[in-house]
Image (cartoon, rainbow, N blue to C red; front, side):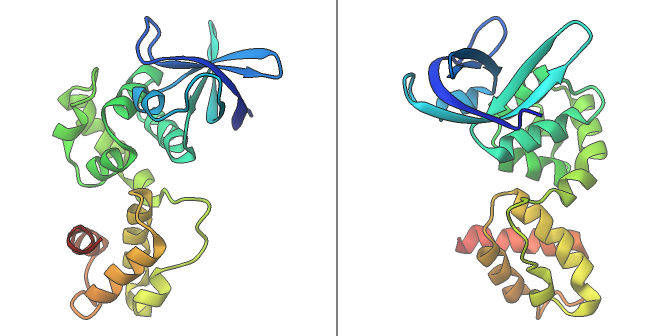
Length: 210
């Protein structure tokens, strides 16, 4: 429901008592959409057309929209909220302080300290998030990518490990051809490696090459 809205951006705020938000005119109806500070920074100027990928939050005492410039931000927001102790405010704080790639990589690599850079996220909550969200983050893949890289890069016995590593790399924003090249460069050395080893070595290769 309300997967996205598109209209004229009437106003936006980087900071307010309710947090960062957009005000969008959609055929004469004004929608206030809560968002991250990063989305406000990268959004068009008032008067221009904007499309926001949204999530409708329904509570006993309130109903409001949360939206972002990209589908990846919206999807990650939903994943973050699935962790116990992470509500709308904390999820938006994380997306304000860190990029999509930084959050995904921090969860997968158990980098608790990086998550605590967000306001409202202490060490205990950060540890709980990595524990509860790691598997979801590993399986998170862009719905626009249907091609399987792993089957071309690994032998049948290694396919599952490469698929898991591929999922994480896609969530971090790497392109399919980049991932395929990193797997190709590693396959002679990592025939029996676990997904964690493949991911670590692929990230190292990509950091040096891409």
